Length: 373
Image (cartoon, rainbow, N blue to C red; front, side, top):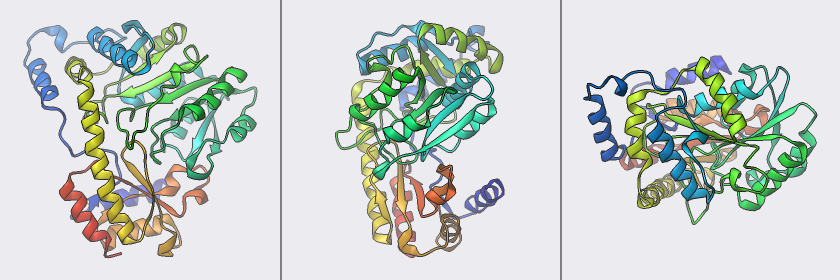
């Protein structure tokens, strides 16, 4: 798959190919956030451009804590937060901190394609568990996958690649298993503010028994359209946070200082910003789905995040990879083969994922091209 992925990357980067693969928005960040970055970039004070203390900029951590308290109803303090180099840096420092060689980490399929590498990079063993119809978590399968070596479960909601948003009932069933078997739950909640159709995001940490065994991962990347800033954070119980901070100090030192300063403005947005964000992406979602369905795709309608998983069975191609290469070369649209998100590649061989964090003119032109399929 690595050679195939490299070949596809070259193809989709060709001239006149619309790239719907990466969740990299081409919409603008909030203007006041950019203004804040300009101000700090022009400052001559050394502390605005030098090393930041290991936990991160205090005001940024306070802003994260306020947001989490508002959204979960739980009380959090700045000392509960660790600023990291994006959510990927957060995941890596967490796994480096909690895993001994051979420890097992349960991951629900389909999953963000980097989770397996995060686990294996830190001497862990990933245990894939398939979800049910419409990507619902299967509690019986999860329970059957738990062994004495199970250290944690990774849960991503809203989910990439499916757009599934786990309900309180579904999360409670998973939480009960974590409590019963004394497992940690690493929750990737990076799309928490991108929700549709009245869907509610439930922080796993807010559920009974989960404050002490949840490790929350998030980032500024998606919510504020600043994927290149690489500013994320970890929230955990005090004993876990202390361990993670010690590892973090030797792993990446810290996220970029001026970007943490500017991030305070982003993290201080009013609730209106987040509702407007969801409204704008819902319009893009509906636009892309209409184009895809007109072209013959069957779409799994996402309730969160900004991806659409599609069923390509009607196109009669041998594999998802072959179909994606046909789209790139034949109509000039690139997407991600569904097999990229499954441990057993056969499970995703009739699926393709599109992202819709694009300008309307891009979505419109892609729709015209897709109809040529």
